[in-house]
Amino acid sequence: METGKPRVAAVSYLNTIPLVWGMMRGPQRDLVNLMFCLPAECADRILSGTADIGLVPVIEMARQRLVSVPETGIACDGGVRSILLFTKVPWGQIRRVAVDNGSRTSVMLARILLRERYGVEPEIIVMRPQLTPMLEAADAALIIGDPALRLQPAQIAFEHLDLGAAWKELTGLPMVFAVWAGPVLPAGATELFSGSWEYGRERLPEIIDHQADRRGIPRGLVRDYLTEHIRFRIGAREIAGLEAYLSLAATLEPGIAI
Image (cartoon, rainbow, N blue to C red; front, top):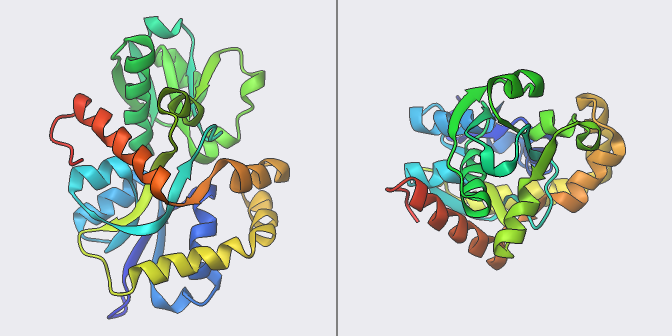
């Protein structure tokens, strides 16, 4: 690590790229030491002290009582497309859910929605994000991020929920999945992360072309995902959605900071 540069842990999924484009290719490139990992690993690197700030699942922000950077993050206001819960049994009969090993916020969201909508509180088991083995081991399977984008839900013979859409139906609010957070924010953090996002926002067509080829996801889906499904600006409605989520999470996991 170069002295004075914050160590930034970013999520390796497609939805993060516009947020970090300035840190990858723009004016913020020389201001940070950037690393990529799964969402859960971002939180673990903050906890272990191997990163100073990360794009942390909001449930881990609450568990670790981290300080968040305002204005930018990963959110949705309706269907998100990349957080899918499949079931092979009727929803009210789910007793075990296999969850993606990269996810924590979405696991809690699935637990909240299954309890609030269907009155069930299933056992959770953690697995690699492969739908067939997950559904062999459990009644339902939660897959997030790029693995979910590579699925074609309409062609899969199981019912599914888009958890972003289900949250909007339940609360009428956006859902926030991850924010930049750490134990202590570096000086100029808001300007740094907002600037990186603004650089990416202005270059979305370039990002879409680059990422579609790189990730093996159809260009049209990449475009729709980054321009329609994902929200990168965290405003008042997103904060209200985050507060509602954490309040419900605290009923399942006492001790979470609200």
